[in-house]
Length: 438
Image (cartoon, rainbow, N blue to C red; front, side):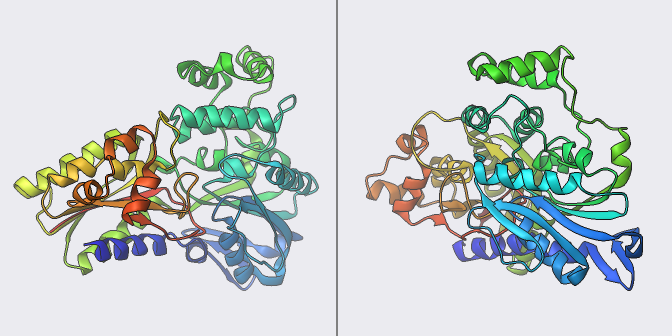
């Protein structure tokens, strides 16, 4: 079952390969740049082509564009997570901090903004945006420091804010997010290629939508920070900016209908759903009756784990919603509320939350992995739990509940040899979870 789980995970990762995803959508025939399914751009209408962007998968996306466009590319810059860089011919690659932004990311973003401001109507920009782009394209709003943004990002992560909430806040503390890069690029024409890492594939949430109209407002952000009890504990400059924004004293991010967005084409080239479909196909080849439960699972990781355990029990007891041998797949992105000081990530925490439940279900296995190959601040993509995990842990003197309370899933699974380690995959389409029953 473990070998099958690893094969199913590999199929999901291959489907999310950003280089292949871009080449499926972008092709050049003669003087025409074709963006599937129905966009056709005449390259002769443009004097220069630049490639910019940011995210964990943006380097292989940019490499695909170099393969497709070759010497037609004038230059450009992309910003990727440390360890995710590639050597490119025309496009400069900068590695920077994620999930907490750092100085490298700030300097790279400043270079991108400067480049975009220099462009005219006869220039073409192709943007490579993927998960992680919010942290990797930091440009603090006037009066806000990088350290203050880092403080707020840490606070939001600690209370389990979801990606929609995190990115709404980021947009209103930034000069690059929430459509602001499109403001700088206008009147150049922008083809914005995105590898989605958000539930629902909302364009303005992927990497905080640097080239996409923003639907969130200062009022929304103030409500989010109030709900988590963070606003009054935030640095004074952020509190003041939120006050001024909510009262209409500051300009909002560009909204739908703004004329700058008449010169942008937004295209999603890869998503969690496509990875789940590929995983389902591999599971069926291996002899399982396979089912995609949902590509939109979010919320608390422990609650999501309990739901997956309930599905497994239903299959074992009644053969419903699919008969054994069964493979049930889900995607999306959960959150973890920090209670301890251990080491782990949402996928490992999900797996640890299932240890007791799995012990009561005959011949079952649960796996959860981040498609980017990193789960939280660890070198693992996720972890595996099966029927015997609780028994094996007891033999080693490991108390699953104690590790769970301390948010120390990494060290629990490390001692069992049950971490899933892929290394950086150079992609990111959220998480893939697997239930196997034989």
